[in-house]
Length: 338
Image (cartoon, rainbow, N blue to C red; front, top):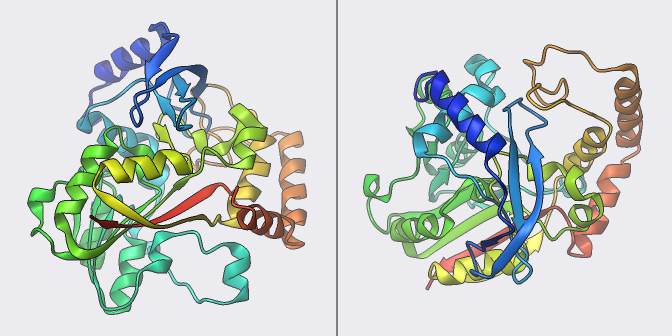
């Protein structure tokens, strides 16, 4: 591994596996005492070890106790996330057309709410598909990404994607109309510092637009440990409305709007995920193209049922109902610097 040796990975996993779980930790957002909730392991991409999660009874934040350095995080995404198996030759910019079909599927991504002809920074931009969408609409586009695999796309598509964590010193102060964090905030160990750094590069009338899983959703409460968005060890902080509102206020923002809009595909994935049983340390044949096992007969039948429900739009209408009630799986937040 390029940035994190095999020996270091082994030592880290041993620490995770054998370190005792404390009964309580201080909440990173409101600092209230937060009791141990449960331990979870990576059911998707095969990172070995279980991870302790705590739940704050005051703001509702669910957070992981263990932390990694920036180089360790970079290696985690480069080596364990399946982007290494994707070809830059298959890259396409996102596309989106408003209308009933888009509404039914869920207008859940931050890029869908960025206007034309603005200067935008996408932090945690992945393969830069949203940057391509913005560029096609006359925007000046820039991005950052921890996963080194994104550099293949940056070179082939001539996109400005900086490798590593966001560093405000790399950008001109007060220079961006929009900064987006699309399913990124939950990956960050120090969200208060990140949001303060973002405020430094936003114009005074600029907009921070973020999306993140909603730990206060109905499905999160009903499904418990089987909710797909815990996603250890990648998701380290899972927010509720109350937690993300308090975080933004402490970072110097005014929340303009907050609501739940969830991709209906997420509920379909949740249904499929609920029928899978992947052993610790193994890659899921559904989530990861590098998995070395096939679906079992039971899992295959479950996938077929998911396909039938999808064709009848069962997941889509159920998701829209949850969002209409404000208890969907995905928070969208608009905020401005104070």
